[in-house]
Amino acid sequence: MKIASFFLFSSSTASLFGGWFGGKKKDAKVIQTDILREKECKRKTKNGDQLFVHFWGMKTIGGDVFHTTWTDRFKDDKISVYNKPYRFQLGLGEVIDGWEIGLKNMCPGEKRRLFIPADLAYGEKGGGTPEMPAGDVIYDVELVHAEQGPRHPEVFDLMDLDKNGYLTHKEISKFIHNELKNQGELNQVPHHEELAMVKDILSQEDKDRDGRISRLEFSGEAHREF
Ligand SMILES: [Ca+2]
Ligand SMILES: [Ca+2]
Image (cartoon, rainbow, N blue to C red; front, side, top):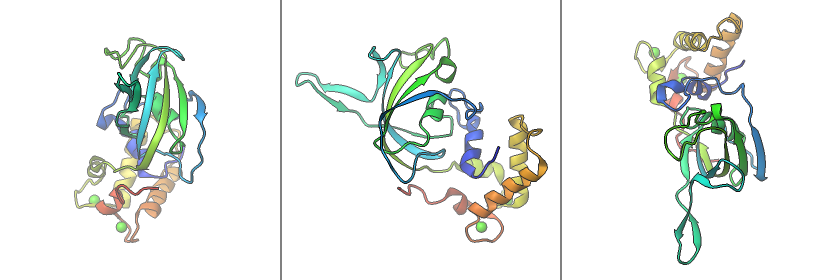
């Protein structure tokens, strides 16, 4: 296990921000993903990115669509148009686990078909609305656009124990230690690796090299496009 950025921490603190299965460990699971349309790009989607997608949700291929951003808005002229793309931040538990797993490493313009088992979707009982059906689901998802997402200030506040607006080595260490503990992974990660994580984070995030991470360094440049 290697934690190299705050984005991954954001992911592990997903329970703070709600979501169906927030806080559950996600990356250990794999789902079947078919590429419907391939695209190349320099920078692929990763945790923390803000994604804009069009999607079609169905129980079986070719079956009724239970939820989509595609609509027959002008029925008389038989013109189908997109509604606005659906927007969410990857890795924060805002969407079902099947999406968190299946929409990583994706390029704009790419279209995927995700086969998602019930436990990574809305469960065996469903979410109580037609948009959240029970059992296994299939989503066709087209990535329209992706950009670096905003980081949650709540995470900074959580880490900044003395509330002085900076994250020190000690505060980061403490946060990591607690995160590992909460995830039940404390025994699997040796102490030296824990220290390496802290060093890793500081070297990546402490842009002005003053040995601590300011709020500005943490929040990064919002909406930087790729
Ligand atoms: Ca502090
Ligand atoms: Ca700094």
